[in-house]
Length: 204
Image 1 (spheres, helix red, strand yellow):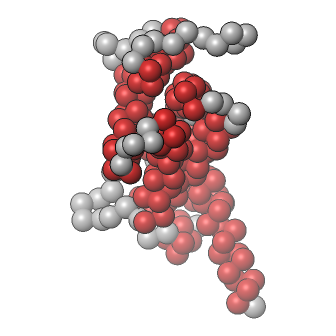
Image 2 (cartoon, helix red, strand yellow; image 1 turned 180 degrees about the vertical axis):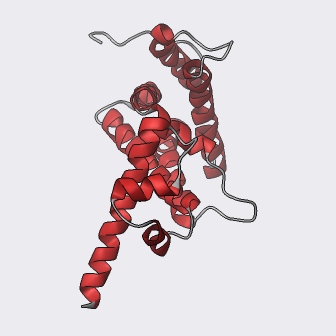
């Protein structure tokens, strides 16, 4: 009996996360309401709060899945790619994910925990796993660098690529036109890796 109750609880938890993810993907984080999540799941509002303490925790679970999806895109992009082209592949993979999942991506940066609340360890660990995808080829290209230097460089790389994508997709005044953003990501990652802009690979 206890096993059935646990399975039912796990099923409801998964359904609530899926419903929240769908609502964010459709309309963004702004205006997300617990009652809409419950209605989409087909459960009572009170049932939501038997699974999650608050809607912020539910959003964190969606953000965790988004980070996992970005990590999977990076894994695919890195398959068979030489280290000196890894950052081009990573940058373009991130751009493709953002273009296809604009609202879910935005939720990663728009959501803030209430004052006094802390981000759970499992989310921090997923962020670290994502950064490790960047750090791995960096460590091979910078064999004399310390782990701290590799970590800082990986964060700098991500920040640079994320920054140009963010200001461009949000149509900020210094953003790159969307039709040339892919080309500029290739150039940016070439500069970050080699100190000079890289052209497209032969046959690409």
